[in-house]
Length: 329
Image (cartoon, rainbow, N blue to C red):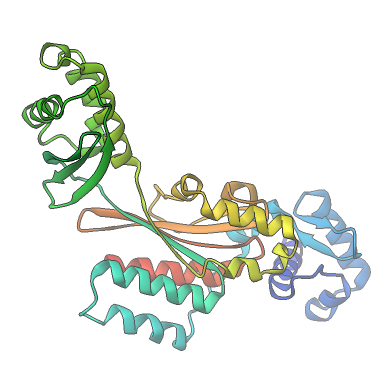
């Protein structure tokens, strides 16, 4: 752990760099901390040695390292009190009883994006305790059917399935009957496993093209369980940050935000407000993701803010926490 003076200097450098996006030198700290320039330079050299600060090529000042931001978030940052204006904007959404639950989440995250100038994303609503009630198939033509999965919570998912011309619709219906007689009341996220261990060993007795039919349904259920509903707000906001001013940086971040699999990985398991800095974000070394899981009426989802590593952590953490508490209330 650092001593009080080192903590104060690191906190000031992080907050100055967040505010101005330019390296911080000893002179800009002297007046605030009432210390000599030499003392501050020594402490900054020590903080750099410990891995909390980095020197840039273009300036004699320092910028926070990934470890510096992590130390700031865990030991120095105090969540920032929300402004009355921010609270008012969000309360207008939470008190609007004509809005559907999903719209409340989307509109509140839209406001986050607007007031922070970062990108926000909602992943949901995966239902935690949905169990299979029924599977139906509707033939479209000789090579396509629509599979309809209905859960005990009234959740309905449709999936267009392409079938091999050698598989008859009759075989597909036999498979559906098998699933409906053996797997009803199974939690949705356990169906792929049950197909593997309970249906696969016996399917050959009932269905001729059993391997092909099995694969069709196994893949379909696998898709149902990993699929996330993804909504972005302020997708371009992150590109307005000075960190992303080169063409290669912009191309990289745009391709990552367009990659559904990468964005699906933003899903959060922990219920607190969690901060993933730089490499931890799994998106870009200059990106931070602040995210949390919400659970309402058995439905779980993730709300997240994507911004530069140099984001206003104290403000984002407060606003995200406020939204989480209000939607779970």
